[in-house]
Image (cartoon, rainbow, N blue to C red; front, side):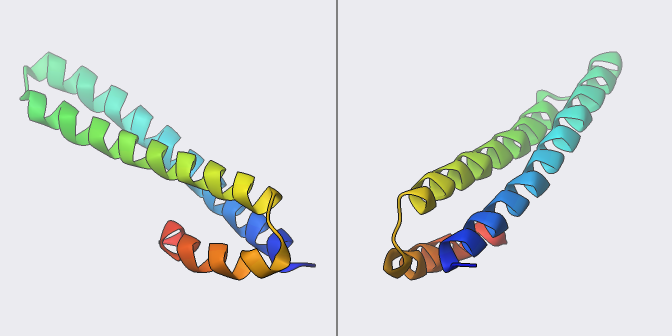
Amino acid sequence: MSLIDLLKQKVEKQMAVYDEQLEAAQANARARKAQAEADLADADLDEEILGQVNDIKEKLAEGQAYLKELADASEDKAEEIKARAAAFFQ
């Protein structure tokens, strides 16, 4: 298996993790928003959760960009992409 294939697989797996985190964060946001509305809680709570949701969405977009770049990359370019994508997996 080539480095590009391995990196694609790793990015896709990480994106699946982020998808699960996004779903959980959105469910949490809905639940906490409903509770906040019931309790008349601060709007800061909603902003914090929505910030988390947006952060995860940005990570998913970043993963999509890496997948696109990997699809068009040569093996020698894969090492460069791997180095830049290191933070994506944290």
